[in-house]
Image (cartoon, rainbow, N blue to C red; front, side, top):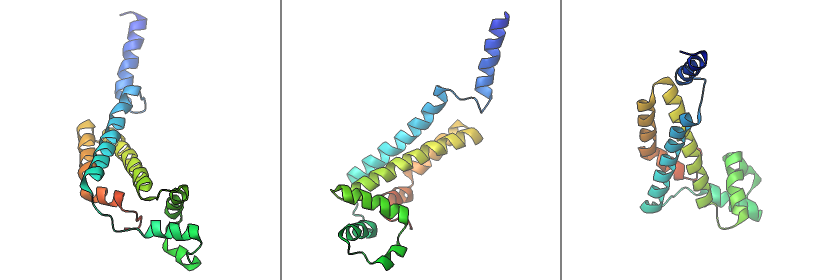
Length: 151
């Protein structure tokens, strides 16, 4: 073997065995896992027509914008979540759907990160299984579409 060939073989071996070396190929399964999660949850939300009963935050956001929310009630709410819902309410058109879309996107990011962590520690097959379990867990879907962060 020539010295150039040896160094390329050594660097290829290092890229496949060193967990700290990343390539563009190494990230596409995580992106695919997040996309799978987002598409499944968006499709399920669009086809189920489940009525979501917890609307405490959208109501409080509308009251806050109208100036009718008592100050002592603010301790009942998560400040960041109320700010998010209020921002969407202020843009007009209601906050329910935009907040659910943001929560679905955050869930997809969580699925991608779960895939990365599981792949690094237990392997690709179990990483795929973990994302599938997370995606099909009805409790995750329900909590993702409720507008209530404290449940």
